[in-house]
Each structure stands twice: as structure tokens, then as C-alpha cells.
Image 1 (cartoon, one colour):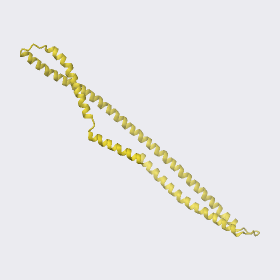
Image 2 (image 1 turned 135 degrees about the vertical axis):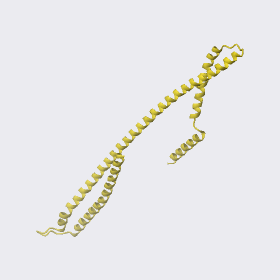
Image 3 (image 1 turned 45 degrees about the vertical axis):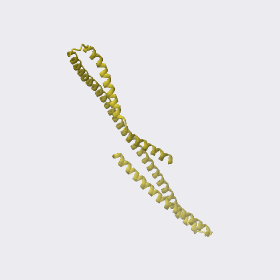
Image 4 (image 1 turned 180 degrees about the vertical axis):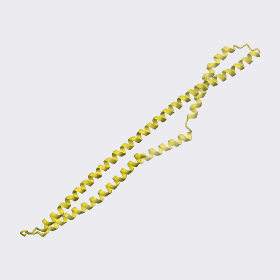
Length: 208
């Protein structure tokens, strides 16, 4: 906020200085033109010197030459001041841009750290989900095998459960990964809209 206010004040000062320089330069240029015209007209008079009396050219030179020198000096100072103000304005704008870039970089780094933490948390949740689903699946399978054994089927329950453990865990992990990819897959309409936008941008760039 402070940087924006400083930039706005610097821009306003630069604009005022430029406007003043243009206005003063126009008037000083007109004064120099009139000065040259006066000199040309006095030269056309072809004066002859009278002893003890200054000529009109000498009189006007003594009166106008210092004024014209002052105009030239003031115009040069005004131009130099405008140049310094513009340079200071550019430096201030550069500093503000650098500060904004640092802030943006800090925000992006914070977002990146948050995304990494979310990814780690998601991976941990997926791992816990695999464990929990596998546990309940193996439990249900164990109840079913025990029921079959109770009905008279001679089944090696422990061995079957041991084999099912790896199969259920692998199937659960693959199912969660597939569901994760499906949820994060872009919608066809949204994908088409992004493609259309990209094509329009390319066409506008080519035309320009």
C-alpha cells in the first residue's frame, strides 16, 4: 500500500514536471525566435555609429542577451530536473516491482509447501485406507471360510487367509489408485474449453 502510494505520487510529480517542461520549452522557443527576428530587423537597419550614442543593436543586445541566456539556462535546468524525476520514478517503480515479485515468490513457495503437505497427507490417508479396507476384507473372508469349514468342508483357513491377504491388499491399492486418477482427470468439456482458449490465443498472437 505504501509502495503504491509512493509510486502514484512519483508518477504525478513526473507528469507535472513533463507538462511544465513542455509549456516552458514552448515559451522559451518562441522567445528565441522573437530574439532572432529582432536581431534580423535591427541588422536590416544598417545603423551608423554616432560618437557617444549607442546604436539600437547594442542597446537591444545589452537588454535582451542576458534575458535570453537566462531562458536557455532555465530551460536546461527544467529539462535536467525532468530527467532526474523520470529516472527516480523508474528506479522507484523497479523497486516496487521487485518487492511485488518477492511477495509473489513467497506466496508461491507457501502454496508449494502446502501442496506438498497435502500430497503427503493424501498418501498417508491412502496407505491407511489400504490397511483398513484390507483388514475388513480379510476379516469378512475369514468369517466366510470358518463358516464353510463349520459346514463340513475341510479347508486350510489360515493358509487361504494368508494368500488372500496379499491379493486383497494389492486389489485395494490398485482400486484406490484408479479412483484417484479418475477423480483428478480433467472433465472433457473443461479440457475442450481450455483447448479452445489456447487456440484463440494463438490465433490472436499470429494476427498481431
